[in-house]
Length: 205
Ligand SMILES: N[C@@H](CCC(=O)N[C@@H](CS)C(=O)NCC(=O)O)C(=O)O
Image (cartoon, rainbow, N blue to C red; front, side):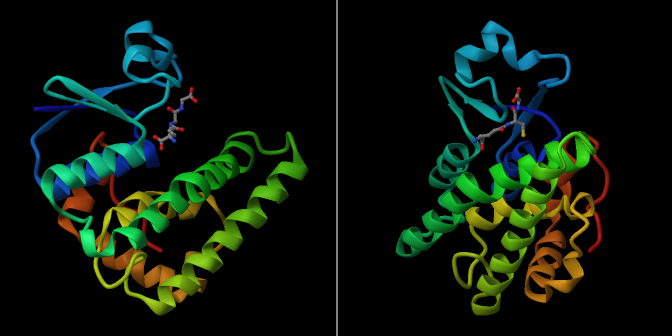
């Protein structure tokens, strides 16, 4: 059985959603980031940057949500079609290097430290709004991020848009992004994976 070390965050939810999608049995070991579980030397052995998520599968462990998604996709042969690999990789890497880190910074300044740095709040608001716009443009051209099929690029990106209520940007104004969000929200695996630590129901647009 796969062991998922995670917290109830978008990076954690990417993996619980993927595990639900591919129907692999798994158990969750919660990592309390406020208490500092991520710095426990035993955890650092499997997570060299002290970050969730990590999985342990039989004898190996994998850290980093992008690497974990690829690992699970290759193992299940799902959501990572070889004939569309380059598109899936591009949109997955854009999530890893841009969507997650930038929206993550927006959460740090706008949601958790409001008033401490007006410059940073404005900077990450602008970047997040720009990401909404660019994702919306992409989704005017294809049903899912990497083309006509739901892939690990969508599984990586969706949990960040699921935080839209924290962003004060108005998901509803971005029609293609909003349709994509709602379509994915209807999937049973996404509903279960979203609620993997009892976080509740998926927020409506
Ligand atoms: N690039 C990493 C980022 C993971 C990450 O930033 N995880 C955050 C929670 S969402 C974390 O563990 N933070 C703990 C800390 O910074 O102390 C991935 O995609 O897995």
